[in-house]
Amino acid sequence: MQAAARIRVLVVDDSALMRKMIPGIISTDERLEVVGTAMDGDFALRKIETLRPDVVTLDLDMPRMDGLTALRSIVRDFGLPVILVSSLTRQGAGATLKGLEMGAFDFVAKPEDAISVHISEISRELIDKIKAAAHGGRPKFREPQAIRMKELAQKAAAPVSTSPYSVVAIGISTGGPQSLTEILPRLPEDFPAGILIVQHMPEGFTGLFARRLDAICAIDVKEAAGGDTVSPGKVLIAPGGKHMKVKFTPLGLVSVLSESPPVAGHRPSANVLFHSVAEEVGSRAIGVVMTGMGDDGVEGLGEIKEKGGKTFAQDEATSIIYGMPKVAIEKGYADRVVGLDEMVPCLLKLMAGRKETVG
Image 1 (cartoon, helix red, strand yellow):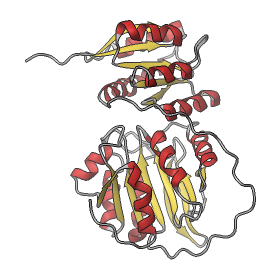
Image 2 (cartoon, rainbow, N blue to C red):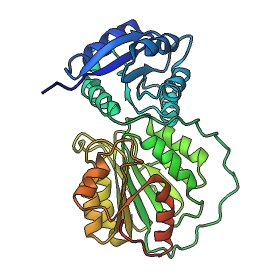
Image 3 (cartoon, rainbow, N blue to C red):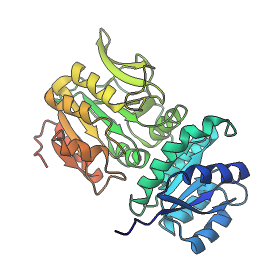
């Protein structure tokens, strides 16, 4: 039986140290092969034409042709999946989020001290994401949405919702920034439920991501803080490095954050959020598992379904990685399988009390 062809990787980074260390990490896996390195975007594009890699790892902060300019050509013109290798600085996080919106497959965050043993912390993550990217299909290039100023006028108090559902809980990972940027701006300002999101991202990225979404959405989006109320027309995104739960208090349903240990490697964990939503909200909850590797959120989705809530899973055609939703569907925890284009119409129908058929 012929062995599967190895995944060919081009490493692009202006740091000579990283051009040595990243190939060293990649080469520890026998299924991967580093076919070349490049010190900036200009060299990278020339090497892509001759080396024909399957996946590109791309630093964003480079001289001459910067990473975002190179990313545009790599995704749009060559159709290659890209793993961004980003610094943990505010500037690095902002560029990374823009790169994900443009069509990069995913990212790994560089340790601040790359010379130390901390570089090994990203080894498994980098290898797993390269493998996933190689099998994720041709990426779609998107121009980043223009930022617009929100109306600063004070909003009228939200009317008491008559919707049968009060909370939408979403668990999402790889491909999440692209998918959320597509669906959340389509929700109306008077959406009658609160939305809670666990997006797998490290600390320092979720706050910028929330602000980016808030700028392009009619609904309000923010990184969750402890004690935030869960209310209609408001989106709370779990902070990187913290679990998010919900709890009923005299003030209503509020967010509760904790730094308890990661669950199955994740903090925040969609399972942690979904479990608390099932317990506190029960049949008035909608659970949604979207694109991502692994199975985070799957068991929690089953708990929401068991409590009488409605459950969705994203379909294969629109998932950048069909991991989390596939497991949810196979376990029978998803009432409906929904594409990105269908997601908002389905939610609005449910909010209005119109019956949805199982698909």
